[in-house]
Length: 331
Image (cartoon, rainbow, N blue to C red; front, side, top):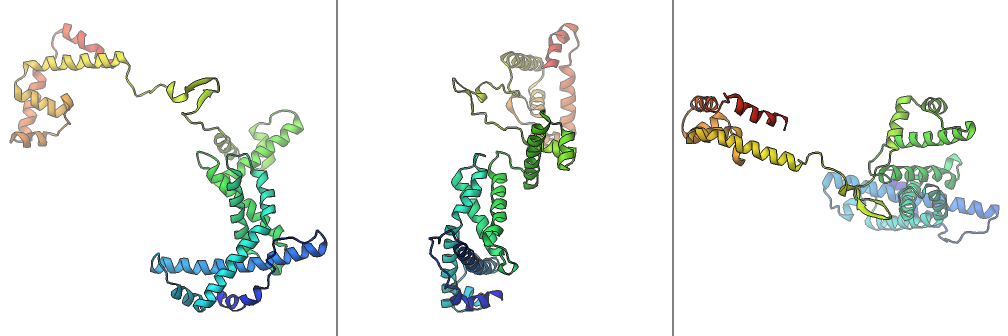
């Protein structure tokens, strides 16, 4: 494992200067800061590898992993594992302290988008740790320059997940940002609001992509929101329910039910019971012919004949009754 060599040599890594006070702004001071942060990233990388081993053990053996089995999987004894963890956690804390000003500087550019500034700083700290795990000092990059990419990526991911009521994919969020920047540039150049074709030509995005991004830019409000500061009413209080019946419709439906029940008065008790159970009248649940026949102790064909005879009896024959019931067709 790559952990073993780092675990054995972690004592040499402890020589990192943990002083949170930065030297003067001279070139030598900046070189010391860069070297210190690069060395701290090694400790962060080591503790991240150890925690990754523990997660693999938890997936295989269960949520509780003993310290001895963790040390065995890492290839070190328990004492060395504890020292490595303490050293890595200390490097993590010191690295976050040394990069705090950088995180705050970048997070200010994303402030005011519906997320608390403290949450943005926490998301930036996550990006610092992600960049520390992937930092390679041998390539000649400065740590502060390299980690800016991971801070911005972590902030964008956090904003795409939590800044809107409806979550938007990260790729679409990037497209929205490009479209907004393009509109500002074109509006400042031409002195008018650009159309979708001009934005597509400027950004290289398709018209379908721009249409999807434009739909996502719509503001989603809450129905509990008030109309304005001077009006106490809320939106849900003035929004009609399309499924609710008006008082006129309720009254007409009740009259219709009463007329239907009056038509059933000419039937005998068994025929009325069959129609009530078959069509779910009077609050009963609708039943099949077989279920009704089982309750009467007869076959479903027998129930079918009773239903047919009852429907024939209540059939409307005279024109006067037909005209009185015809308006119920529009309810």
